Length: 242
Image (cartoon, rainbow, N blue to C red; front, side):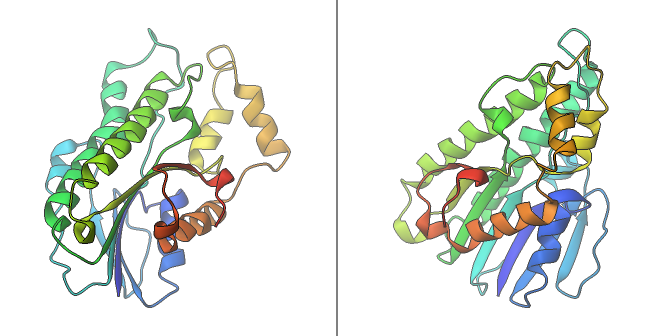
């Protein structure tokens, strides 16, 4: 049996991945999000607002010594405002950093504290973005938080190299490509006077160049099933060869 913890299972990639995993009876899934939209005998849900770090700190990882594999997928992410710096709402800045980097780091910390000395297969997959590698107009908070997620993933992976081989936890930061989610819809509805790249995203939708959440989920499942074949920490699924 394999136990997978996934944040952001209420919609988008998180929901698609949870439903894909649950088609196989060897998986148990715990979803972590504000809303529960999944009903399945092997699914449990933790109702949590990841923008509230106090809620995140209270999440409990159970004893799972008899489980073959344990995976944490920090999937939840948000871009609440598409404005240039100076026009951002300060409370929204805090909200988005909490969801995109602070809560994932807390969950990684708690996951590693609980499972470091286990010897079954354990993996952390953080869902990042290509925007974590370069600056994007009006996405400063999103870019910075995803960049932080990348470098923190690399730091944790380095730390794991000092553990005994049988207790090491694999860590990845994965850019899932451009996926047709509510975030993309928000981007397409943004003010072109605030966001100079709007036309690019309109054309991606117009030309059917967006991946579906299910397609993204299928690529993430490939990573879950082939962690021993992947040596790099930061991955772009568009360049994945498995």
